[in-house]
Length: 122
Image (cartoon, rainbow, N blue to C red; front, top):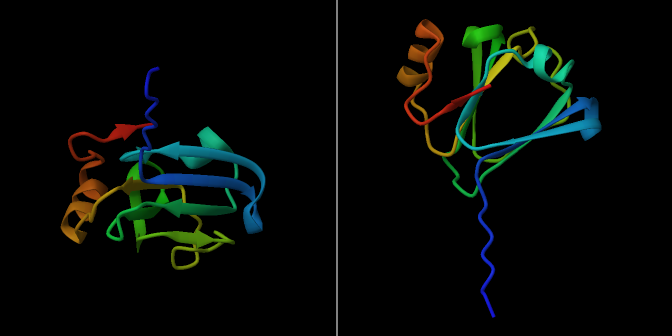
């Protein structure tokens, strides 16, 4: 009898079309950047970010293509209402990593639009 193994990929991000984790749900996994949330998923109103690593990083940007102002979250996060989450602006793009992204790395992503090696871009 063969042993079955299950592989979990972290971090995991669930995006919801309505506030309070309701409506359509989209799940993405792994180290990645989403250049334009509206274009891919429509209007996202809430999210759940989960990782087994307490230093996992979620960065929300106020403009598409990782531009504009940003807000950084570390570790597991549940955000029931994304309206005006970044100094009065909505999230338009994001980067998530299963490790700690430094502020210098985040600023480099914002300035160049280039993700670190090993990241997927969608």
